[in-house]
Length: 115
Length: 112
Image (tube, rainbow over all chains, first blue to last red; front, side, top):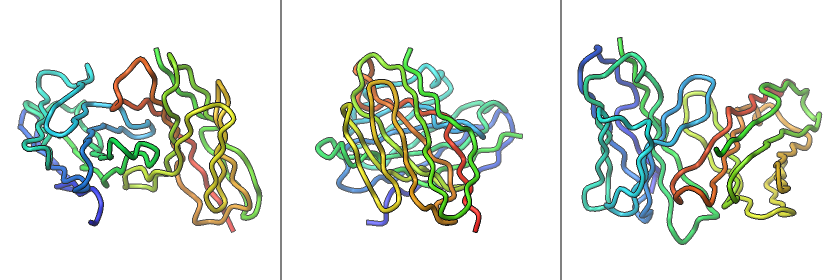
């Protein structure tokens, strides 16, 4: 297993367009997380799945954002009607419920630029 | 509200010059404090998890300690490859297992 994979690595889009990002977690991990990071800040929590169930959503995740994890495998994060304020690095992470002391494994992120 | 404050914001060390990074936190019951390292353009890389005051973890030149209000990341005889941003995050009893609160990080530069 090569770790958490995110696609694409970079995305430039025009304001108002929809974008979708994909995350493939480590195969034996049942928990998956999405975070957002802007320059000079630490990552901010967006949402969290255990298997296919979405257990928590941050208020940062407005109605323009939606995340799915069908069948408890890969996950997608969609942003509709993008705004310039959505420009950020979107990070996906995964972990195993019974190995909490190993922390979360993060992917390299998808850098979104809205022009 | 759960808060994490890291200091200093930036730190420059000469190779071999030991120092410590600080992470102060305010949470409604700590359910884990995490240290990560982040290189430019990459996602955070897990270093340590600490759960209770008095706990210590070590890995190579790094040692993390925890008290009831803060955590320290001690770097002994750093090398240039230790240059990175070090992030601290907490998970509280007031939130779900998925939510970590991150600080802004300390940007460490080690010069030869």
